[in-house]
Length: 219
Length: 239
Image 1: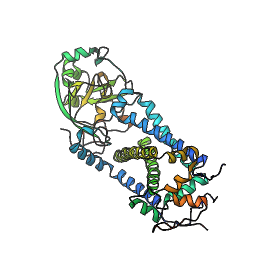
Image 2: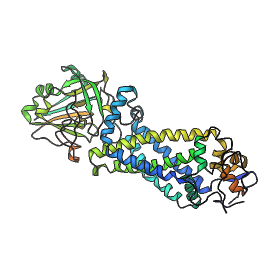
Image 3: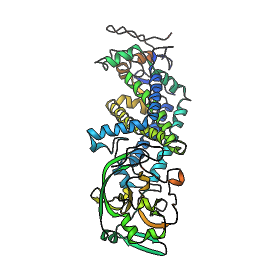
Image 4: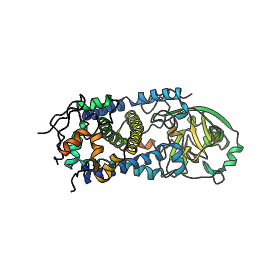
């Protein structure tokens, strides 16, 4: 496994990059098949409702598999731990107007990435549960079926908006994309966007910066 | 170089991510339970402000297209045939034959048993009662069975239900031909009942001695599907 160099810092392992690709592909295809099932103009044009339905069901039931596999990797579990925790810097980052100038010792993920990750994880669980309930609908009363449909449809719309937002943010950040493509990010970029993490990775003690709190340092 | 987790310290910060996930699960569960009420609320709200986007915003109105087979069956008006079986007499009508019969129009709400509803849908075609009278169907049975050229769907009505003035063999919807996904070129519209009674892609009407439960009815739906008075639902009657 290649390690960080003087100019590049390792950000994601190979496993993490492939898991991201597989989950992104699955969710992307779920959105496409859903569009053909749901948008009247599209479904009228292409027909073949049965094929789209069965594809959507298979893709949906398959989605937990890469998620579960992901948790088998330590690097992923550590990143989940990072995503889960909101530090003082994260709250400052959310309030700050110049959050991208490197003044804050942001960790490996900024607060926006953490919020998105938590939302997408919650959304995967809810979409899976409601989708499975609609698949096994013969065991469910009509009123509850209406409820499951309501949640599945509305959350799907929000997920699509969040995914578009996620891709929009990614297209503005070539180095973030490079991180997911190659596993490495430039040191300068990491120092600007994720200073707390970059300094810990380099093994450097953070210099004090204009009244901002020091990032927590490991022993 | 430092270790991969050099930036991580124990109990650093609050587990907001977990709280978001659990909060979403809680809100989701409540929304499932209240979904029936929420569906009609959002439907009314969006219908009042922006009716033109109803078909894209979830659960707010507009038709949902259901078929029980693979895709939609295809049929041109030229190839279309409606087989009417009245005792020993079998008559086959073309689309033009239907157009030559007395035409009736009605505008009615369309209510699905899964909760969605479309207000004021304009239909026109031939009253089922006119067909019953013309082909003497009531002399040959107490009920009607309907078949679809999708090859799977069936429906039924008692003769009394079939004689109502709001039951139409429709050949037109919203001022134009009935599109393929809406059951064109010819479908049944049983306005006072849940939409599963309104069989799409209608190709057969037969007088039967008793009611033969239809596709969804053998799968647990009520045979007498009055809107608001069946299937455990309390929707407002259609107008």
